[in-house]
Image (tube, rainbow, N blue to C red; front, side, top):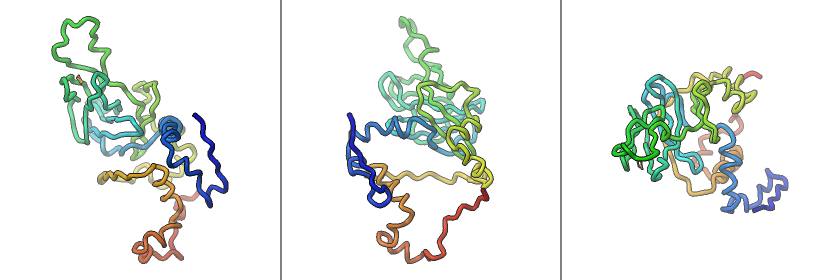
Length: 236
Ligand code: FES
């Protein structure tokens, strides 16, 4: 499948409407936009203590992130491959993950520790049936996932340098200087389901408030745009 997309004077005209409306175009985006690099999916404080976990969805991938009894961070596909049952939901503390369908039990490091009534089943190897791992790392207050097929070795997990290089690049130093890597506390998470193509939402945010005087008259009445500034507070 191919698309003809014109980008004439992007800021003024926007991109071709096919970019926002086409299911075919959207089908390319998870791989090309979201799965290729690191994506912030949660906050380090959500898994501050051993046995903390949280779940979420990135593109079409359901995931669970946790900290095991040894303090190691893990992330797994949160869908059990046998019958596509979701293993965990929400967030909180768990000592293990128990599949709600057949009750198979997994450690927080992803290994299958109990599978009821499977004794004697030919070719069934408990140690080959663990949860499917995802690449996970932490940088400052953020927990990040990268949807590649190759799992990280345990030594590579939670390596700040890895995320700095691959995710933040040269911005890492500036963000650290501004305290972004250490001074943000997690208070709560609220989720809103917005019935639109994801790019419409981003586009709305990224127009820099151009729409605000017309679409949000209540908000604009409380702002003085002459003095309003989003100036970078970090010296380069
Ligand atoms: S579907 Fe989860 S244990 Fe069988």
